[in-house]
Amino acid sequence: MAKRWISEWRPDDQGFWEKRGRKVARRNLIFSVFAEHLGFTLWTVWSIVTVQLGSYEFSTDQLFWMVALPNLVGSALRIPYTFAPARFGGRNFTVVSALLLLVPAVLLAVAVGDPGTPYWVFLLIAATAGLGGGNFASSMANITYFYPQSKQGAALGLNAAGGNIGVSSVQLVMPLVIGAFGLAAAGLFWIPFILAAALGAYFFMDNLTSAKAGPRDQLKIVGRAQTWIMAVLYIGTFGSFIGYSTAFPLLIKSQFPEQASLVGLAFLGPLLGSLIRPVGGWLSDRLGGARVTLVNFAAMAGAAALVWQGVTQHGFPLFFGAYMLLVATTGIGNGSTYRMIPAIFRAKATEGIAPGTPAYDTALTVGKRDASAAIGIISAIGAFGGFFINRGFGSSIAATGGAGAALAAFAGFYAMCALLTWACYLRTAGPVRSLAAARV
Image 1 (cartoon, one colour):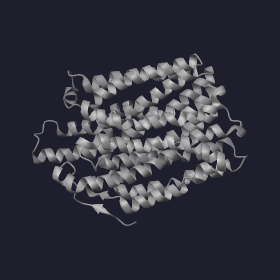
Image 2 (cartoon, rainbow, N blue to C red):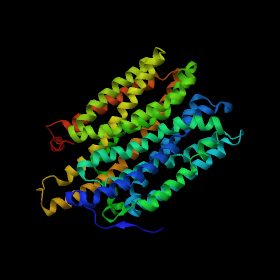
Image 3 (tube, rainbow, N blue to C red):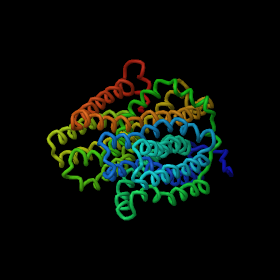
Image 4 (tube, one colour):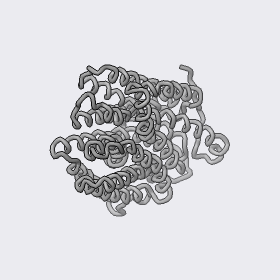
C-alpha cells in the first residue's frame, strides 16, 4: 500500500491551523465519517434482519442474542483497533477496516439465502458484523490528533455522530431494500458503498507521523484510574445508545405486537441520538463536560423510568415518547463524555508545569497521545453496554414476559453514574480537586 505521511502537524498553533491545518483536518474528517458510518450500518444491520426472520421460528430471547453478539464482538475488537492507527497510520488502517466490512455483508446474504440455515450458523455470521463496531475506535483515535484542543469536542462529536447515524440509516433503508429485493439484499446492498469508502480513504486521507506510537506505549494507559472511570461512564452513554438503538425494533415487536406495523419508526430513535451528539460536545466545550454529563445522567435515569412505566401500563405513546427521550439523552452523553477524555488527560499530563515552556509543549503532546489511546480503550469497554442492554431485555422478557425489570436496573445504573461523575470530576475537595479545577 502506498504511504502518505504528514511529518509536520501543529494544530494548536493558531497560525499553522489557519494556514494549513483546518483544510487537511476537515478532509480527513469527512472521509473518516463516511467509513465509520458504513461500519455502524454493518454492525447494527441485524437489528432489522431479526424482525424479518419470522419463518425461522426463533424465540424472542434467541433473536436478542443475534442482536447482542455483534455488540459483544465489536466491543472486543475496539481494543486492537484503537492501537492500529498509531501503528500503521490512520489513513492506511481506514482502508483496511473498510474492506473488512465485506465479510459480514457477504456472509449475511449467505445466512438468509438458505431456509435450512441452523441457529448456530446465524449466531456465528451475526458475530462477524462486530467488525463494523471496531471502526469507531480507530476512527476516533485517529481524528483526535488532527484537531486542536479547543475544537476537539465539536470535531469528535461530528465524527461520532456521522458514524452513529448509520444505525438510523440501516433501520430506515433496510426495510425498504428487503421489501423490494429480499433478505439477502440486507448484506449485498452495502458492497459498492464499502468499496467507495476504501477508495476514498486511500486517495484523500493522511497519516500523521506525530501520531506514531507502539502498542507498549499505548497500553500504559490501561493502568490509569481515569481510563476505567471514564469507561464506566461510557458504558452508560455510548453503550446505552447502541444498546437501545439496536433493541428498539425487536422491543416494539415483542412488547407491543399490535403495533408491529410501527417498527419502521424505530429509526427515529438512533437518528435523534446521533444528530444531538454534537450538541453534547458543543455544550461541553462551553460549560465543561463533567457538568453536562452529570445533568444528563440524571435525565437518563428519569427517561428510563418513564419507559418502564410505558411498558408496565402497556401505553405505546408513553413508551415511544419516553424511549425517544432516552435515546436522545444517550446522544448528549456521548458528546459530553468524549469531550471529557482529552481534557482529563491533558490536565493530568500538564499538571504542575508552567504554560509556554518547552516542557509544557512536550506534556501537551504526551497528553494528546494518552488521550488517543484512552479513547479507544474507553470506547471498547463502553460499547459492551450494547451487549448488556440487549441481553438485559432478552433475559427480562424470558423470565417475566416484560422488559420492566431490565429498565429498572438501567435507571439505577444511571443514578450511580451521576454520583461517580460528581465524585471524580466536580467535587472540589479531595484527591480529584485538580481535575475539577481544570473544567473537564
